[in-house]
Image 1 (cartoon, rainbow, N blue to C red):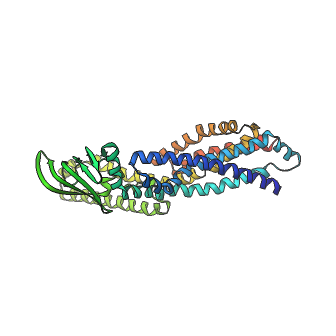
Image 2: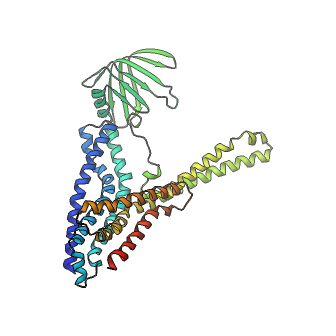
Image 3: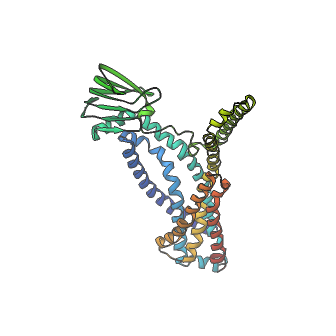
Length: 392
């Protein structure tokens, strides 16, 4: 039996690793091209983000490639009557299935870690590379496209000569205490010190609030995050590491409690002083929206841990369906086995996952509803194993 176990394990690992390498490499290239196009990255930035984009790709490719490996190995074994031969020798079929289930369990734990890394460490690393290279990114896009745009700034130039922007037009969006303005100049240069982006204008005309002014030399500073195409979303629930979710929940609950106490204090003061006009004029609908925003934020935080765990354990659930189905189909054509397994999974698991996440984030159902898709697949896998593999 150890011989069968080693044989199946070796075949699974060989197929899994080869397929994983090919598919992950393809998706990394796709991800790099997408990031380069969306962010205007140069070759240096593209190389630097490879380690950060790898967890994002692996968390999608591991479940699919593990299912492909299981369908390939067990479909070929069943098609060659190897499973029938094993049964005829009095060896339990689980002898050849356990290696796949154990491998899937280990990879599920690893995928949970990847789910956490991809949306915290990975995305943060990509953003850091983009922010640190914003000067080169801006120059690169201006050289190739003659324009650069994000939500805070728009730049148009006639030409770029070295570090000099020829006849640039900068349009800055309104910020706190600063109206929107447009600056045209004979030439300009951009410098970055890691925190601020400094634009040095020569012979500049500044238009703001309908007024114009002219300066021979003009410097304008903006935070580097405003100049990049990234936003500060570190407190979005999907970007919070699992180890910090409890801390974030406590912080949001404290803010919500303080807000409710302030509103109750204002209400009590108005009733005690007879200031009924302020009660009538108060926008209670707006207050209710603010409180609901606090609750929605908490619901999303509560959803994240089970969502990441259930997504990671899709590896095990996929294999629980794929391995017995491949044996039942007895098809040596691995593509047929894979698509016959992956088709129902695609139609059942992912819609249930989306349904569960939406219901949990809205607070309608318990966050554990995100495990619904996993539970359905596991039940189907147990049924296939008992009725199609072990019985015959």
